[in-house]
Length: 118
Length: 118
DNA sequence: TTAATACATCACCATGTGTTAATATGATGA
DNA sequence: TCATCATATTAACACATGGTGATGTATTAA
Image (cartoon, rainbow over all chains, first blue to last red; front, side, top):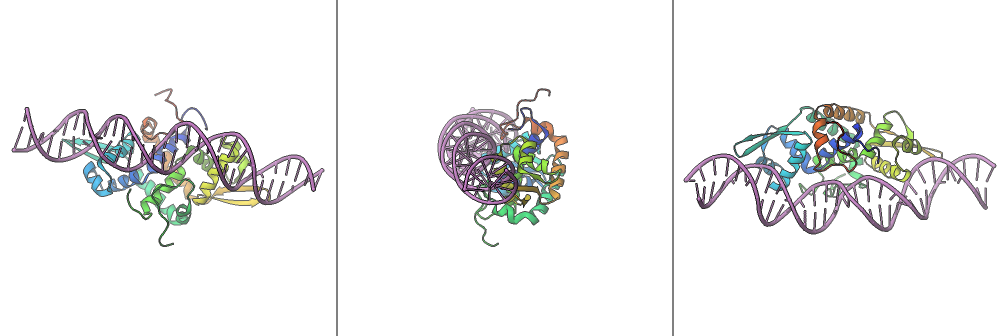
């Protein structure tokens, strides 16, 4: 590919990959409202417990979320406020290029159906 | 997964996925310097021509890049200046959470080796 | 101790996805 | 026309990745 050692570009791609899954993004967006337990997050996102736990582990590994143990509960939260900024900028860009993202099927996520309304 | 119809979250994830590959990210970063032909981009990124062309097609489909035909040359360019902003914010976040992204192997890209220096 | 709750981990499977080589298209110049 | 350059397209392959269910581990309460 590009280089053997992890370059800044590679790291950036990896960070984006952390955001490039609807489940993980849903978790992050749910966490924008404040710290949540895994059970809360499952309820908010509709994910199975094991699935949510897997994705949260990924997000935690990547440093995108932090967690605080509280008895048998684990409260997850965003580790950095700029993640919100990132999501906001993305949303703004999406406003303009949404049509394209909509249409892009080359490396599409499996769960987007054909648009019901243009 | 979450919903059947493409939600804003799904679209956002898709947009991030467009940025979540080292090759595509390298192409976008190369384009930050200005419009480039495919051959130029191949030289700048080390990608094979067909591979670069594939990724550029994806980026174009997603609306992240625009292209201008010029004889047998095609000049690609970023379609939106805010893409640069997105990359910059990401780089800033990376500065702080880089250690985590470094260590995250759950959904790692294949091309990052173990760090030589912690 | 036993049961129940909250969460993590694991192996499996189906599918997504990046790369490559080969080939096609299309434009330019001799 | 023919050769060449610039780019796009395609099929095929190997591998990454997300989802699931089963199970493991703490923690709490009775």
